[in-house]
Image 1 (tube, rainbow, N blue to C red):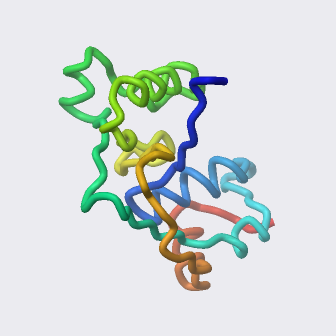
Image 2 (cartoon, rainbow, N blue to C red):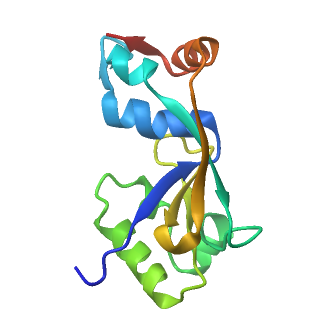
Length: 148
């Protein structure tokens, strides 16, 4: 629709990205571990971004005290129903062109942050590198992931 805009979802660390994308999107928890198709593990890349327009992105902070000051709690990023969080993203996006995106607590790994970066931010892909075998093994061990 007229209010549609592009969004790129990123994460503060490789662990948060792994939990948010590989495990959440591709895994299923069976028999005591997350089963993930081998191709979903071996074909993944770490993508690095840069912003040409500014030194730093201007992000609406939906974490900690900033979240509470808005009268909200972490339900906004902890719910499996994205209706409310998407409504907030639309409201933030349309409230001012200064907002480049949103920072929120990762639903899949609550000790880390995830980001919804708006298309207008000027963020560009710098490079993509395949996950190294050791890195992948470490992530699978840490998160109890089994390749199937």
